[in-house]
Image (tube, rainbow, N blue to C red; front, side):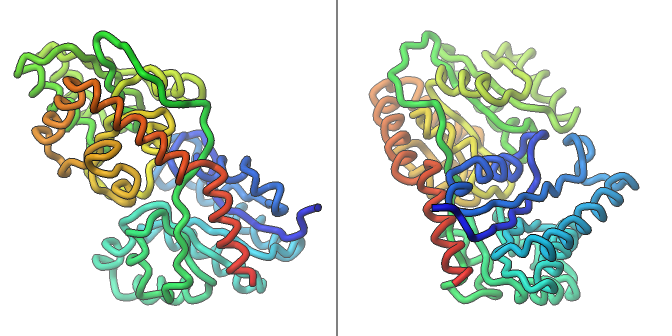
Length: 366
């Protein structure tokens, strides 16, 4: 049967490869396109990570062009529902709020989605007029989507419980659990290389392990450096301490999948707030034991002691201790890797995400 309901999805598309852009791409290519007539507006106003957060006339003009396209789409194509990702910073939210208000003024139903976990913290430190404006805008929508049960509280001041929907990230990957025989063992870190993502903590943890005489492993770090000082600090530590760490440029597609297939252990210890990181989903799909921190909805995927470990934030000693356990215990790696894959298949496939999004869309449109 031909899909009749129209969903307008706003969101950036890669490149650059960041979590929200990746999510938009996966949603648009998923089986949702068989259930609904998907309309997409790319809200990206920059071309590279270096432009992120910087003002330019080109970006202003591009934003105005996107708003005009949004208005025209709402009037001429009359979507049944508009999905708007929202920022958790003042400037970003104001830009996103214009999309919400355009949809509201043109009589469209709107649901917003937060792909982070710092919303409440931002508002607690925001000026009074910002909090009032956020309340005004959110009350013009029909609900909000968050990435985990533990993030529902972020919107309890704006929506009743039944209008706060939980849809974790999910996608299908050409990955599976496999028993590895790597010598030395391969540890993988896959993310942007910045302090907030915990790269310095991983380097320090490896230094601690090497100082204890443990060297039967190597670490592949894959990502793009965001700050020169972080790059210099990490590369200096690796060189001075002769650490078994190799830095690789950011990799997407099959190159990234190859790193995941060949790894024994996955490490991602962010310091800053996260949503539900795609790298965690990918590592679980690859059947890897995961070491991470309790940020955003991570602890709903990485179950401490079951398919990996949750360690305290910015604690290289705790990180090195859990890494040591996994490096020295093949049975533990095997058990946790299998559990990662099982949890992924049960909760984080594309089919699971599509089902949850469809249920949410139907409830809101009803």
